[in-house]
Image 1 (tube, rainbow, N blue to C red):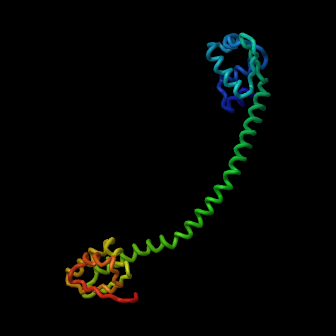
Image 2 (image 1 turned 90 degrees about the vertical axis):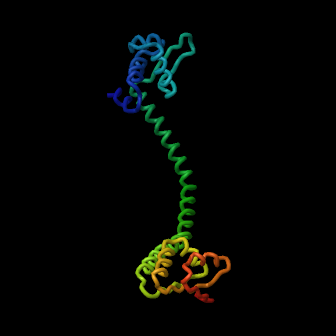
Image 3 (image 1 turned 45 degrees about the vertical axis):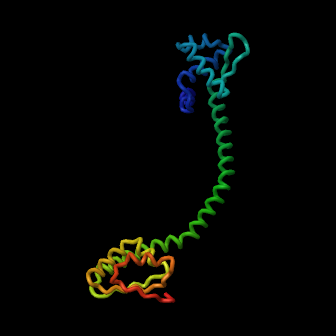
Length: 203
């Protein structure tokens, strides 16, 4: 049924009935339509206003205004064509914006690819200090740490520091072989006093 198609298109039941009445009885006043629909004139005006916006109902410039409508089948066709045009504009806008989005996506992919090794190093560093913590906890006699120039910073920021100091307290001989850097000397103060620190030019 045509009225079911109009309901499916999002029209209210009163709007559908307005189309059916006006389609067969053109140039009706709002008061006359309200009487046919058994509703108030305000409700009739609200329905007519929306149908006018959709291009289905037209009104004369007379006072009072007289309203006419496309037939039911014409109304369905009109809605289809209107929405098809909207979809075409939407598709066109989407295609236009997608070009820029693709460029941004490509840039983001390049950035991720560039930064991926950096994150991989950080991830591996976490694993390294977890293993170091476990080694310190399991050490019984001797523990030797080889740290790079800024390795002491990473050690002090990890849970391994406490495990290393605890091992030294237990009597484990702990040695740190590293490239001493003036800017990081103060961090070595966080190591237990019994820990031996040796400088190496190359690590």
